[in-house]
Image (tube, rainbow, N blue to C red; front, side):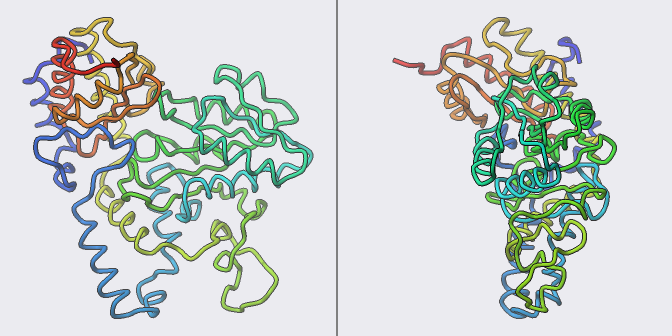
Length: 405
């Protein structure tokens, strides 16, 4: 979208025509605030408090343990998983909601390494999210002769060889918003005989992932960013159908057993993705996440992606027109290589983010010098993106922020 379209009137017209315009009303939006931190914690769907109250007061408070059956609590990890599956392009029975993102990644790393005997290398990037790197190091430390190799993103393909068991990447970079070529890199991993494991935390619910069509083997992601499941929402994991009877859960537990109520001492994995269950499902967290997913059930990933591209394009174009040279754009300028965020580098980034918050524009800071602004298309208007840009322009033109002393 060209910069000449960057006017309040044009944004108001876009909002009137926006097919997602009515979805904003399904979320709690703080009056007078522009929330650009949905890539850290998504906004509260209005349906969630009532659903939590129902689960706590009726299903837990009255029905108690009977709700494992009457309330379909046992089925929740797979039922909610299928709802996420429709967002990330998975088939029914390929997604499970359980645990946290880190635990899900540890499970999938162990499963991938076990499925590629004779290969000893986990290939990842030096820019991967820290917890992803910690998880890989932890798994490698528990297994014999496993190496974790970190390379620059542009060296991924050249580093794939017959020693690589799993290519382990994050789809959208948490600092810059750079989006890796999921389909292409997955194909390159397969060409080398490796499995591809993707962290979708910054892409699920914001961009089109296409797990099935793009050949993804394994994936995990959180429920509290663009999926709006709330703080500490349970994570999800994806296991491609063709792998489900081959890979093993390295953290087996009672509910992942083929017949948990036989209470036998020897483990037999359940069929399908349910074998990756370990602990008792977090029912309250699952209820909140399911209500959040239901509020977007009539919205396609393609619609969300199209709007997020427009929002970020407009925002970047405004800064390029009004503040040329004021920031280094850390995010790719090409929208096809950018997730749903805009990251700006500036020596006074932390002070700028704080000053924006005082003006009602909520973003976040990532050290050492990144202003990170997330554009959640479900509840952000075009006029909000315009106003946020105007606030940032005014802030920079007036020097209304306190840099380092």
